[in-house]
View 1 (cartoon, rainbow, N blue to C red):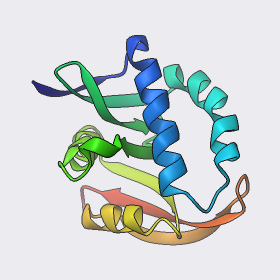
View 2 (view 1 turned 45 degrees about the horizontal axis):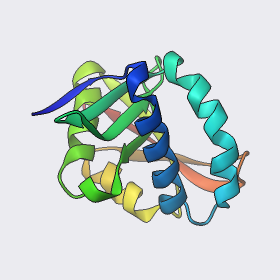
View 3 (view 1 turned 180 degrees about the horizontal axis):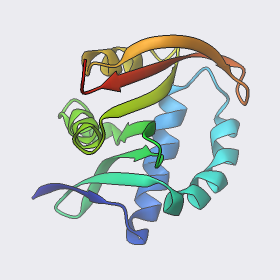
Length: 145
């Protein structure tokens, strides 16, 4: 059975593995070592974030992480389960719970840019991620669009 539910500690290993794999693949313009070093911080953040996990028969297939102030930090789907609509379902869960959402996406991550545009997010400014020195769009969505 497929379901979206809140993250719990038993999911930590799966969530961290998916997070690392997706970031290294989607952001191949950033050294893998950056993501490997960042995983410790990600692990510390887990309890402070709103994380929804897509699970099927006990298998974690993807997740979305969001701050308490409606900022999406990423939608992550494990490679074997992509193109099954999991990312869209996770994003819809966030939209059901919030009236407005924001996010940042690297300009070089064209797949993610198209995904977010398809789901009604609009670009509203450029900035540079000071940790990676990569240009990114800040995008927003509102249920009032």
